[in-house]
Amino acid sequence: MRDLTNANWIKAKGILFLVLGLLSGALILVEHPSVEIGLLLLISIWSFCRFYYFCFYVIEQYVDVNFSFSGIVALLTYLLRARRQRS
Image (tube, rainbow, N blue to C red):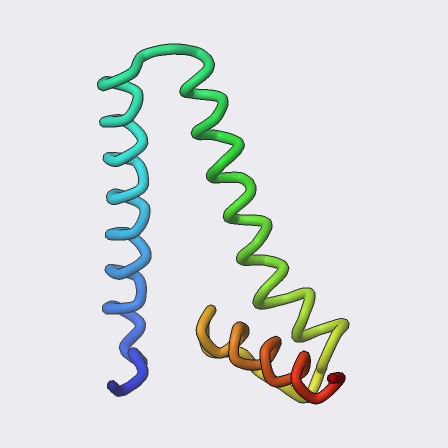
């Protein structure tokens, strides 16, 4: 599969992710309207955002500046390969 390079399609993809996230979060809160569910949803979203930042910024900037990750699978492959090399 080719990389997405058109700026308009990249923006559209980002907007679709935002809409999907807002819609799914709203549906969860409509199905189970409580403060606890809302807080758990916020903590979950925040945690995944921090994990994404860790994967694609912290590791590239501080762990291995020579490796550029293209996605979660590339990160997992890198980590597994590094683990095998240490063994």
